[in-house]
Image (cartoon, rainbow, N blue to C red; front, top):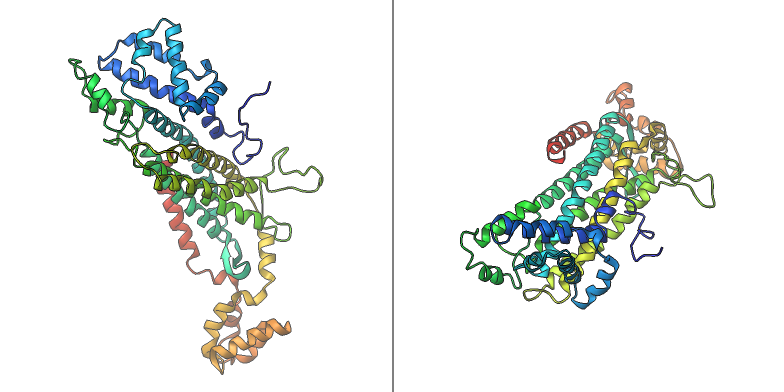
Length: 464
């Protein structure tokens, strides 16, 4: 049977993930219904409607009861999906002899209240999965940093061999970015706000309709209760004209994808057969080619890379919409946020899911790292050599640099050239040879690893 559902056939970066299900049209419809049901529950608790009305709305607030493709088609009539879904909800209530519930549902609210709040609810639900996957990935990177803190490899600058480093520091730097992104995402998710302002942000209809209800909670208390019931923050005032809650969430999601993308781009480079310093974890049915049986494609990194290439445009759409929002409800800018925000949730969710598996299963090949570092030979230590030997060589730094240039241009071994230029009385043979040990020129690498690991440990309680 054919449907209008998006199964992600052209979006393998997030297809089939937990976040894909948490951001589906069905999940969105359920979030919209959950907000409507929660509001009637708040009104019932405050004595503004019968408990039976709240029970009836709870029973009818089930997305599986509704023809969502038809809701989607009808949404063009009012410019948002809530209008036809609300009509169907009321029809369901009346069909169940719950006419009073049909009358009270959506009381004092407007479409933007429900849509914005539902999107925050959707983000909270999807965000919990993203955070969990980030924590798993971070734990994997921390383990790599510890295990390979002394594994020497070549650092590359502008694609070229630069100086020695350690794979442990490289993994720690990946971890540092992930922890920073995780903290930003934590802050965004913790601050997800309820939107509740009525037609133009004054709550005039609700205030007016409750003016004669004796003994009921005042409007601000009702809004606070709704936020608590949904697990969202009560911002105190409506934010329908202030789109920074959306851009803040979008930026945190984009940061998450960017941090994952940096790691994936490195893995794609380092897993090339001619480099072969790392390999992705193998899994049945993954990484194969339809035409070339010998290939083992680094698919996890490819999919994360796809997400990293796609997320910035979605984040830019949110900022563009925020900058062009006008009046008390924007004429299209608000609408353009929805798909972009969901895309960011999906891309971050897919990237975090792929990253969790990649970081915890990455295979490291120290022998290849040593072989690659040896390609540059003693020239890999040229920065150190120049600084240490310039004061000892007749002609100083220019003379040392000339010897390095000669080694490069004539293909000569650098070490004998330098030994001949440095008086034996100025530097012993043992000290001279020690200059060429890559493990002896790692600076503060070990200390930096420890600091990053400590920062990760400090983030763990928030991420758990």
